[in-house]
Structures are given as C-alpha cells and as structure tokens.
Image 1 (cartoon, rainbow, N blue to C red):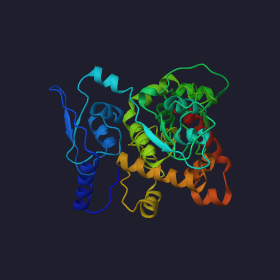
Image 2: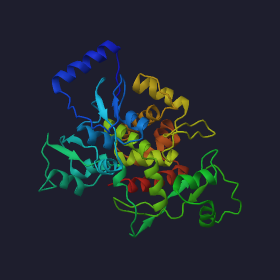
Image 3: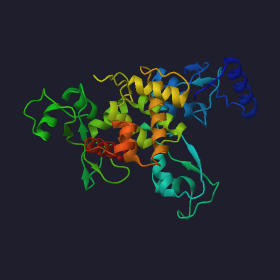
Image 4: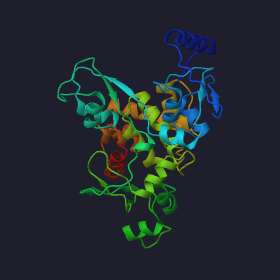
Length: 356
C-alpha cells in the first residue's frame, strides 16, 4: 500500500474507507500476540517484522484484501506452530476483470499461473469462452505451494551469468548447490577465478519445460527459508499486476531473495538496483524516494520497473529481461544482446519453478 498526501488527508481517507466497508474484528485468544497497524504500514512489512507470512496474517485475521489495512487496526499474529502450519496453506486471492480480447492463456501467463488452476478456482465449464467484465479469482503463489520434487523430461538447466564481484561461494549459496559441483559441471581449472559474463551451468537445477516445474531440494529449502522476502515480491507483483512467477524469478536470479546483497558495480538489494536506476524510477514513475537498503522499498521499485518494461514491450518477457539486464536504451536500439540471452534463459527457467 503506497500512500501520498498529507497525514491528515490519509487519516480522513482511512476513516471514510472504514465507515464505508467496515473492518472485520477477530477476537484474540489469550495466547495470541497482537500488532497494531501504524500509519504507512503494509501487510508485507508487518509480516517481515514479525517473522510470519502475508498468507498467515490474512488467514488469522479474516482479511480478504492484503492491500487494505488501516491505522489502529489490531492484527493477530501466529500463536502456535499448529496455527502457523495451517495458515501457510492459504494463498492470497486476487481478482481479474476480463477485458475485451482477453483469453485464459494470456491471463494465466500474466499472473504466473495455469489455465487449469484458473478453471478450477472459478468453476469454468468452457475455457474458450470469457465474458467482458467477468470476474476471475486468480490462484496465487505462496511458500507452501513451492514445489519440492519431480522427475520430468525434457529438462532445461539453469545457466548463471557471472556478474562483477561474484564468487563461486555466493553463486553456490544462491542455488543451494556446492562449489565442487559447479567446478565439476563446468570443468573449471581455477575455482578462484571467474570472468564477468562467464556462463556457468548450475548442477542439479534442470527444470521441466512445463508450467509447475519442481525445483531441486537444495534450492527449495532456500526458498522456504527466505519466504518473507518472497512474500514481499509476490505481494508487490500482485498489487501492480506483474506476473507473480516472473517477478519471483527475476528477484531470485538477481539476489536469491537476499536483501543484503551488494554487487561491486553498486547494485543493491533484492532486485539489484543501482542508485541511478532507482533515482530514475523514483523521479519518473513513483514521485517518491526509494530506499535501496529497505527490502520493501527495493522490491517495490524493481516491480514498478518490471511493470514499466512489460507495458513498453507489450508483455514480451525476453525484451523485458533484456531491458532489465542491459538497460532500456540498449534494448530499444539494439534488441537483445547475445550476452544477455543466457540471463533470459535462466530467468525463464526459474519462472517455471515458481509457476503453480
């Protein structure tokens, strides 16, 4: 939730919204912890501060819209492991209103889900027929839905493109593999020397070339351990209409969902944004400052940038990734550089991992 304007106007708007729609008040049990929403809070921030997930907060507090919380509202936090395990299974619902010319293929691709999942969630009898104005519940990603194992062929291995300042230690940690495994898979003679732009095949990360591909156990474990960041990425993508699986894949490719990553080129945080890029996004798209070291602000800026590129390149994910990797001007004037293609292939493989 991103507010603009004076605090008094924001408080008045919140009061009007409260009077208009009401707030579901869920009584807290004696053992529950409770947090009071402060001015400017978002559900993803609260989840991150208290070590829970957006889905858990929504389930515990009977929330239907993750972007609609109000100052002074009291939210229950997870009280016991059983409640936590149960609420992890609840995904944050979003609703898509069908526009003229849209079809399930395009809608599923936009939100990083599948046609079958949308058909099931909405009880659709004829997937080929949609009405303009029809409201579709879109099944969304949550950590509990992250795949764990599969054996499917054919496969497409992840290829990591080395950036300035990276080491085999950081690369192996990102993908949940080991340095010796990468060395062996790529026939490296010197594990301490990597070239910028070098392509490394990541062992054990071959992904089925179908939606819903399952990730290796090592990476799946890391995904779960970094779920709070993944929840922020998913929530921001949902809010801005960016395909969730695509956003999660870009964030993982860039930082492995780690807020403290800083490259030698000065790219910072989850979405690996440089200060000039962040300043451009802040000035031309957000009209508000960006704090690169703050996970939510960093992710929001990156998602807004992806949204801009998706509109600019009419949903062509390859061109979107080219602009994100090599810059908008280069993508506009020269298309996709050859050195960018492995990066694109890697992100698109990761996207299949995060597709329900």
